[in-house]
Length: 252
Image (cartoon, rainbow, N blue to C red; front, side, top):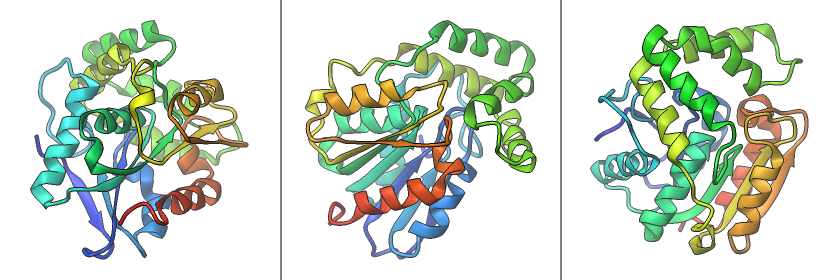
C-alpha cells in the first residue's frame, strides 16, 4: 500500500521519515518539518486510514502499518532512513526496526509504548468510531494531547484534524494498538535510539518511555517538561533540537 506523504528538503540529503499518532495527519509534524527540511530530506506520511492515505477495511496490525511505510519508501527509491514516530507512529517505528533493521539509521520514539495502557479504552473507541464517527471522540483526545495552558486555537485546529479522521481508519488503528506488544523484542534493536516522553502525558506516561529506553541497548531517554502526549507539537523548541542531535552522524 502506498501512503500519502509530503516530501520536503534536498533530494540528495539524508532521509528522515516522520510517522504520525492515532487520529492525526502530516500536519502534526509541522514544527519539525519547517526546521529539519532545511538540512534533511523529510518524508512525512499519513498512516493507513488517516489523512489522504487509503482506507481499507480493518482490522489492521502495527506490522501491516510498518509494511505500508516500507512499501511507500520503496516506491521512492529510499533505502535507509532515520525513523521518528509519535505514539502509534512510535510503535510503527519499532516494528520497522524489527522487520527491516538494515533500513534504520536511527530511531526517535516519542510518547509511545511497547505495550499501551488502557486497552479497553482503545477497544471502546474503535466501537464508537464505527458506530458514530470520530468527531465525538475528538475533545477527549485533545485533552490528552496537550496540557491545559495550550492556546484554544491550537486545540481547535487539532480537534478538527482528529474529527476528520475516517471512522474505519481510526477504529482499525485502535485495534492495532490493542494488539501491539514489543516488550520481548526491544533488546534486538541495534540502531541509535532516542526515546522522548512528555512529563504530563496521561496516555503514555514517562514510565512507558523509560521502559523502552531500558530495553534497547544504549538508548537515550529524555523527559520534556510542560508537555502531554503530543510533546513534539506542544514543545517543538525542546523536541526539534533533540531530533536534530539524533540525526547528526547517523544518516550516512
